[in-house]
Image (tube, rainbow, N blue to C red; front, side, top):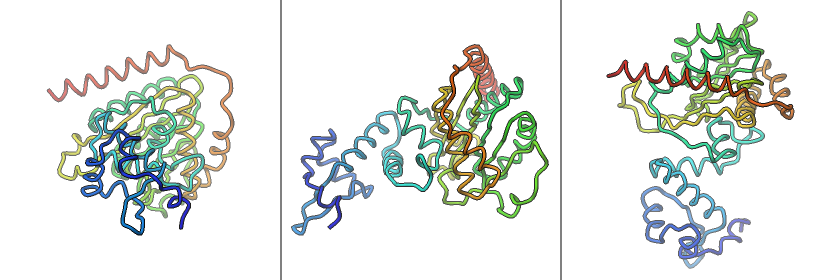
Length: 296
């Protein structure tokens, strides 16, 4: 008998009392979504443990923010799975949602995310900051349209890495200095569903990350919906950057070794430049407004 089975002493009534979800609802969830999965006594009675309580509370929290129930269950269960990447899951979105729960997720269309991403990219291009830059594009075709912009950005960055379903053989070719370094994502990797722009800079750190909600095969490309968070908190951005660097190392990108080591060091003294944050915010508002006006 496993440790979790030994610790599974809660009845479904106990679980309902500790989570605020009625026993009837829990049975419906189990029937429709295969969740929660109970331990079964020889008598056939359901029993639950503290992990069930934590995950169900997480599902309720996500659902209360507007996430569809089946998606909330998928996210909460995935957040509990152990992963090979230290210090957390090999997903920028999952890492930030776990370590910074106050970051409120927003459901945004791809068109809005493009405007946000361009605003961040252009703000850094205008300032030529020496920083570590990471971008997650899901598919190579998405990166190809952004390649000229990112090649310009890479010229002034300390290091630039881009994540997509690149061919592994292509990524082994030598690159000239100052070019984005491709990181090939396997189809089943958590970051293969993510959108991210992460810039670890001293004066204006920023991280935008989103994951594509499932079941949108028939939705027009620009109208696809992502659940998104973004932040300029130095600690949160550093954690996002560390996830990217660690994933690149795990996937065999040698150029990421030194960057991962740098990002593992404690943050030095310093504060985010509020004037630059204001400039970024103004650019974001202008770009998003232009996209909205362009669609009406």
